[in-house]
Length: 275
Image (cartoon, rainbow, N blue to C red; front, top):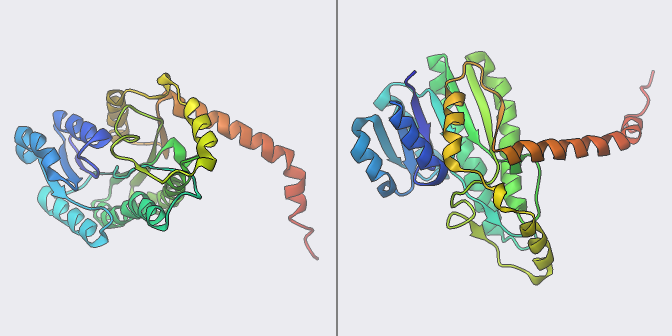
């Protein structure tokens, strides 16, 4: 079934890969990026099937205007994929105020503004699917990724609440949770703090855990995304990659073991109901 898909962060990585795949299947795509030059090849090949829009997701007014323009151009928006974002690498203590605010501004608020803008369109249509590209790092935290974790934890919370709020409007919400992939997410797309030597050991230990088989093949995500956008009953969360599924399962088993060990203390802290 042909769909109209609005996707942010379309200039590279997952964004451009998915845009190309959606277009190849005959879908209509509104592709946003800060640098529209990165989409010239797709515009040349697919013509009116793609609407490239320049957009800085941090600009709330521009986000609402982009959704309005997309709706006017294609008549509907079936799927919103909030894909724009980047990783900030560094220990919590090392992070400057500007770095922290920018990380949350882009990864969380940028996503929030587009989500708010598209809901009235989808509600009027009586259907829609909002896909938030989160991360397995939105479900557990890792050293030297604290602010990135914080931004994705926020995405998880707002999206889970949103799913319950818009269910009656026939709008679905899905959090996509990738593990590491061979994109430039940890390369040119990433930001780095100024390293403090006190955390060199933490950094080295974390890097030692990242083996070659940790990173998945980005192309392998395409069939999963097609199944997701075409599902009548999509999940709230979809893991991408075997590492994401296995690591999240292990983390939650460990959490339940700890919670169970402290359950008596937790329950006692409720107190006795007064008559």
